[in-house]
Amino acid sequence: MRGSKDPLEARKGLIFWFANYNRGNGPVFSIRPTGLKRLVITFKFGAYAAACVEHTKSHASREDFLLANAFFEQLDHEYGLRINGKPFGPNWEISSDLKIEATRKISERISRESIVETVNLVMVPIVASVAELVGYEEKGNEAEEAVPDEEGSISHALTLKRERSIRNRLLCLSIHGDQCGVCGFQPSDLYGSDMPSILEVHHIEPLSEVEQPRAYDPKTDLIPLCPNCHRAIHKRRPAYTPAELKELLHT
Image (cartoon, rainbow, N blue to C red):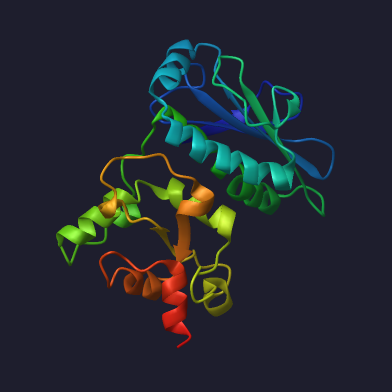
């Protein structure tokens, strides 16, 4: 992502866009203050993004829309999402004039900390949703690339591929919370809120057991698991269901 100050709004804000686009020919995300205790996060396409819009309309799959819609539903519950000025509904479509807005109320006057927090809570899920639709993939993560692949096994490589990206993780934690869906472990209780969550995303129907690619409902098909439970759930083939693993845990 790239970003800068947004000089076009009445009150100064910040504007961001994907690195392989510019502010005019692709998706644009902004955050700006309104009043003393509100921040508005906006997504829209740039003025010259017709090619990007057409690409998105022709390439985004039903699964991509399910993921994006699940993100938007979660945001709507907390921040009153509006699409083209109207309350959020499931029948939105990709178009050059699509505009999505979310408003976050904060308890104190706007500060740098509240802006950063709002970016993480609201803008990042919107960016993830749009990235899913556009088909945008980051070119690697420096922190991850710095860690050598000590195992080098096929199963490890497949796991990295099947999770696709951090977007599934964001969606899963947004819906189910930062808590293991089997044992109830909450990383923040042990390590504090400053450490990133160590929970992993599990497909309840493992992708290795699906004969044909299919769309999935992120509310029912994804679950956050701690590393121990994630390893345990795959100790059998076919994998245990979360309910079966819970029974083992309490016997």
